Length: 417
Image (cartoon, rainbow, N blue to C red):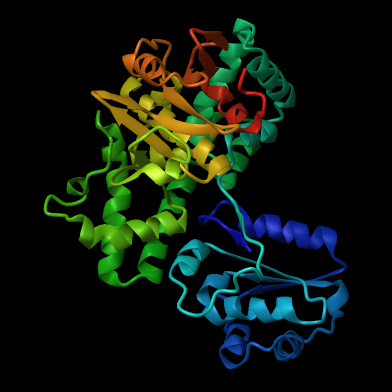
């Protein structure tokens, strides 16, 4: 079961996998093929389901060499339940499935979810490393990883090239359709069809209307549209008053859970202690919300691409940088935490090889913020990380990581220095 927000490429990836690895392949879209979807309302017996598919699609196939792809499976709860019986059958059935809101469906599953019978994988928007791969920059990736491990600066020309590509990624984000369009336009930002991002936002809002009741859909939309405003505040801990001046958490709790489970937003929790396990010290009342893709954030905030490319909007570039780091971290760790003490705030706390590491994010070269220094003095972590446009380095027990190298942090098991 492949879970992820809409437009992250779930159908494309599973379609390629099925075509490449199996002799026979049957694709079924349960949202469009109502006749097949109806089978599951009448039976969840694997043999009856397979026999019905044979008849309705007029195909004969050997289950030993055939894979069945059930797409948009979230529309049919009984189809999800049937996976348990496919798994337990003595016959070698091969089923893969995907759906845009599977996270929501699992979170609110009314029937018995087939726990332990389904391998669940998560798909996120393409991260910066994958953007470089798609752009044919494999040599640059190798060089970035090398200098990350060595804490030695890249040559200035290479450093500036990587920063330029990072700014383009802030504009594009990681949605495959947007990156594909960029590459097909000879990697010209000016020629990118940015309406693709607008269309993705429209599809997200349509899902809110389609899969929730009207009042819930309105609340979902209000929270979603409030995130750019939340992140632009100096203290960007989420406040429900940003959604509605009379809003109360109890009224919006279910909408927040829906957006979180859908993969459209990323929740970053405040912890009361910077100790492992971080999850044990959650402050249930304070959190930040990020969008699941930095390009979608730029589009939702209506920031023109030239403002980012030519450094014309320094304030919101900082907002995009923090959201970008959140996306990079979440795709690796599946969780996000931050910490506050006195008047200071640490943007992120992460765990590397069992150690809690403080992370500060700066969108520019000026990195004289006191928060990280005060944290280092008070808590004496193994080391700290400062993410900025500065080159690689290691000084005063702080590892300097350029914004374009964030993908290295969780990938590297030697980052204890």
